Amino acid sequence: MRPYRRPVQQSGDVALIDLRERGERQRHGEIPGASHVPYQDLPEGIRPGGVLHELAAATGKRLVFFCAFGERSAMAVRAAQDAGLDSARHIEGGMDAWKKAGGPVAH
Image (cartoon, rainbow, N blue to C red; front, side, top):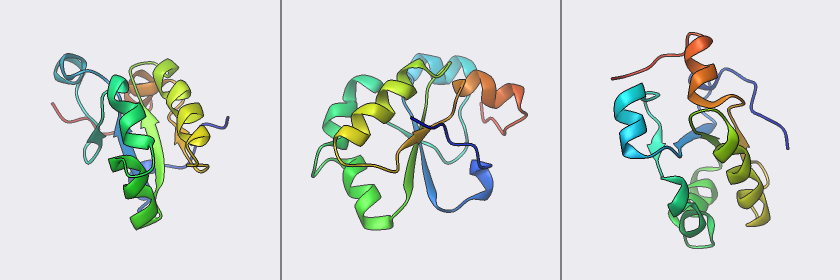
């Protein structure tokens, strides 16, 4: 499983998916433009007919998952790929790494 390494803010070919809980997002900020799908809702979203599956199919965008530190997003990539979303990736190190790299954060 490969992490996504291109600068995601400069790329129109990705859909950022925030897997964190609402409280995590409120405490630690959000990546502008990211969609919120809590990790526990992921199975419904990635199945055929689910919102994430349809988003990827309709737009051709690569799903790039992220969480707080990268554990949930790594599992999400595996689940998405098992559901046929082969181009799914994640931000290695999650929101923590994003902030350390100077990525934009909205509060």
